[in-house]
Length: 114
Image (cartoon, rainbow, N blue to C red; front, side, top):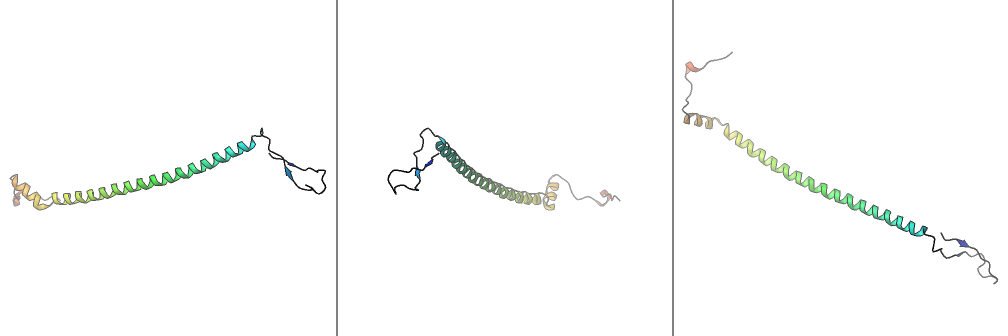
């Protein structure tokens, strides 16, 4: 890194007690390594933030799809319950039995089980 050099010149009162920085050695690559490491760390932080935001957005889309599927299933359940009630109605069963030739049982045909 840069080193502080104290020089005392022959001119009285000039640069007395002042710090003079020497030029950085061009062969010293610590600054470049530090800059690259800092850049990589910043990029990782940015990528992590972007990735987390994408995960939040994808989770929102999945929740929306699940809610839509749930609403469709609730609607289908309502239609199936209505069809179930319609199919098991006594009037419908009597009409189908009459079409097949069945009629109400006579008193001798009924057996009571205890």
